[in-house]
Image (cartoon, rainbow, N blue to C red):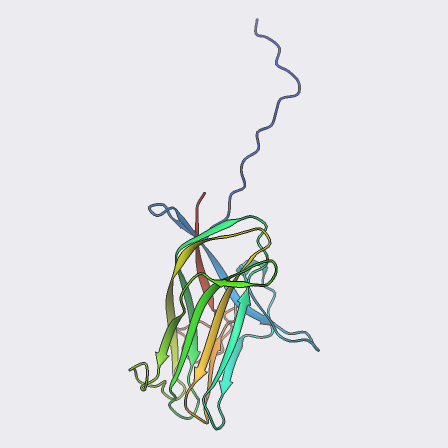
Length: 216
């Protein structure tokens, strides 16, 4: 007859498993998609965030424009994730995908850049990628200017320096738009709901960051 099993059996818990949108088994990487958006309360400044699509509630700030007067002008926007509650190791190549739109009336020289930074719990930042630039500047980029009203889908590939994002730290996507000609207005979009703010149905108004992490 078998021995009686003890009543208080230990329960073995499973380790926490991060959720990924897709994985590359060959490289041991999992990719998580973050969507950029902005929110503005009545009397406050705009808060720019990176967050999974499922947590978005119809943000009210979905584009950023730069308008030049008598000189070149730029605008920097920092999109932050929430603080991490588990450490994650960023590794591989991140992808940033968005659409920008030229001035409605005239062609325009402009360029836009992106880079990813780690934000410490105290607020200090460390770049974990080099900035990547999409230039439509005949003077410095060697490509034709944005045509009047042109909508261009942009993909930027950002190789990451392997970095651990610790508990309480954040990731930041920094976007800088510079408009060279004047007077002109150029804009880019970051509507996670993909609402139609452009005329070309082949481009999306979402701004997505595909972020690779090491699968532990």
